[in-house]
Structure formats: C-alpha cells, structure tokens
Image (cartoon, rainbow, N blue to C red; front, top):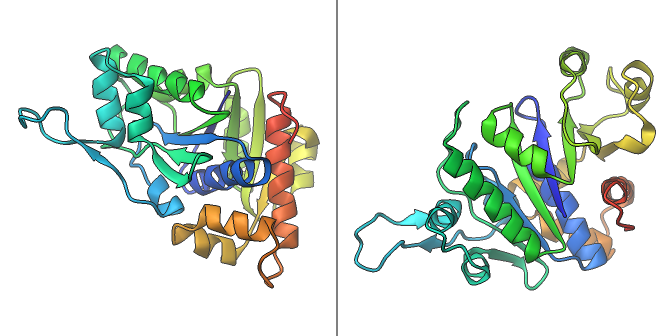
Length: 267
C-alpha cells in the first residue's frame, strides 16, 4: 500500500505531517514504513527525521560523478539494476527494522519530464511497497507530469489544505481529480481560525470521515524542525514526558486511523 501526500500550494506542512503520520504507524502499531519524496522537489525529509543521508558512487573507477539517494536509485532503475538489495542498502534507518526513508537527490521541478524518469520513479515506489507495510510519498506542491503519475498510482491521496478561506475557495473551485480515495488534512489547525473544521464540512461538503487535522503545536513544530519528529511521537505515545501533549497526540492518532481506514487497515 502507498499513501501520497500533496498540496496545491507550498507551506502547508505536508512533509512534517507525513513524517508524523508515518511515525505513528511505526511506533504505535509496529508497521514497517518507508518514506520518500518525489524527484520534483528539494528533499528535506532528513531535516524532519534527523538522520544522515547516504552517498553512493555509480562505479568504482569514478567515470561518473557521485549520485546521492534517489538519484542513485533512478540510475539503477534506468539501467535495470534496481533490486531489493540495492533498495535496502540505500534506505536510511530512522527506527531499525520499522521506519526508513530514501534520501532525496537533486530537485528538478518542471512541467514536463522524460517518460523514462516517470517509469523509474514509479518502479522505485513499487519496489518500496514490496519491502514495507506502508510506503509514504511526499509529492510536494503543485501539479506536473511526475506528480500526476505518482498520485494516479497511489492507494490514497492525503491533500494538505491551508486554513484560510481564499486558498480553500481556489482549491475547491478547481475540483482536482485524484484516485477514488482522498483524505483532506489541515496542518497547524487552530479552532478559532476564520475557517474551522465545521466550515469545511458545511461550505465545501467535505465529509467528517474524510477530514483530519494536526493541531497547531509549537513544541511539535520545534521538534520537527530539529529533526526529532519520530522521537517526539514515540516519546508521547509512551507517555514518557511530563509535558501535556495528550490532545495533540489524540488528534494525530485519530487522523492516522482515518487515513488507514480508507485503505482498509484498522489502526
């Protein structure tokens, strides 16, 4: 199963929310998760998870420059050398045997991509699916050919929504078509905002069972910016801190359950 995270515009907290949801799956329910980011954006998963990227060389004689992370896997896929062993060796462990991510290479945001790149990217996702219980794909923001291909192959699309009326009006007027299963997610959610959860269900006909929130929480945001997303989730799931994070964690876990339920998994 793979879960794609996407937003129409940047700055919606898509990467941090994906890392938080994946951390719940790994830490609360012992699912093996693999996280990756599309080739169409500058990768910053390592900033949320606080681990060191791996570097790989294409060949020992240095006939080619060093390729990092996803670039290395794309090269292997293009040359029909993408195997489980290559994938496993490229993954960076966040939690041993439970949570991993694939480091991003160079970002090449464009409206048009070579067919070979799209095929290789989709092959990497499929390979990751074979090695995990859940694969999480950060598709970034905006629409292009590569994003369309990744969204089309996903089992569910989690659409990050901003909490302001003008952006919401713009999004729902366009009526994007994804796969059959879509969940909407509001990050940094504040109940007293001009657009609340109830407004989304009332004005834009979003069903309650299709809408999740991650509450505004400066402590979580600080931890995420310091690369401690998974550690924050693990710490507060286990109740090892005197900090009162109960409400935040309950909403995060409820949102995670909602996403999993849409793909037939009971959390």
